[in-house]
Image (cartoon, rainbow, N blue to C red; front, side):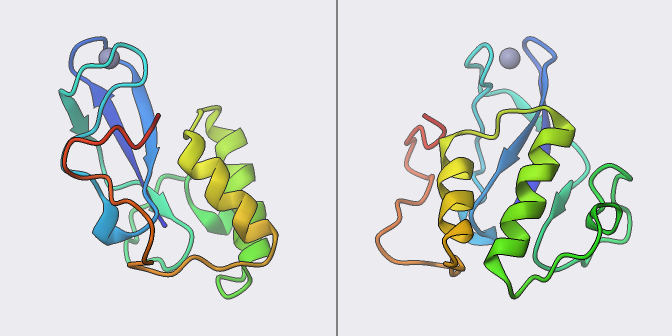
Length: 126
Ligand SMILES: [Zn+2]
């Protein structure tokens, strides 16, 4: 569940973009404010499942949010909601949808079938 921070080169808005898996990370991200696609990825932000990156933002560090059981979708969902609240950003309908599913006890799988990958120019944030 990677979440990256981007800054829009056109309007300067900083925003977090949520992806359902590493394979789903889009090479092109569209600004939710102005629609520009000149989004610069900032430091790889944070994600709920596993922590490979020791240089996490203090805000983004799941450790600051207490214990998250990565094997418990409800626990991850709770963290994700809190994280979204902390950042004050709208992570989009994909995010809400996934959190809803996790809260009902479903752990999303990498490369899940039947889910459209955000490539081919699809506006997956819509
Ligand atoms: Zn913009």
